[in-house]
Image (tube, rainbow, N blue to C red; front, side, top):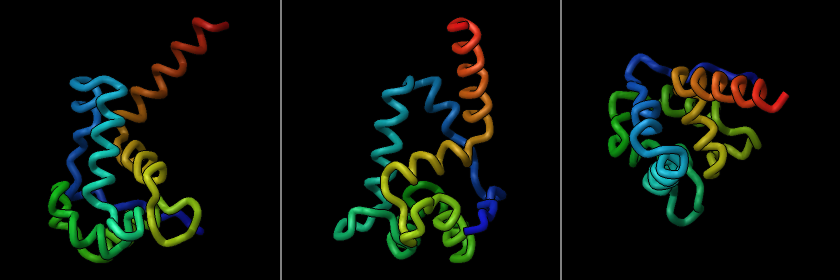
Amino acid sequence: MASQNPPQSHFYDHLPFMANKLGGDGLIDELCNGFNLLKDSNKGVITFESLKMNSALLGLNGFSDEDLLSMLMEGDFDGDGALNQMEFCVLMFRLSPELMEGSKLWLEETLQHQF
């Protein structure tokens, strides 16, 4: 499946702030809370319908159906048309260029100290 870039014109990247404030474990807890807000309670995954219905809770209310579907497809690694918790967390990190850059620098420092 070809990867599309999710819309970012309406997206404000809060993850770096949250990571600095909460630390790694706290950030993961908050991502899990976000997943739980967006998931379909019967299916246990984020579907297009549950994302559309609950997106305003995470400040995504300005996104069109096409934008939301694009985000869903971007994170759907197993191709089942929905996001499980791991896919959601990976997508949130991928949507945060600053956090990804910070993670890359941290990894490089760690590798330098190991070798």
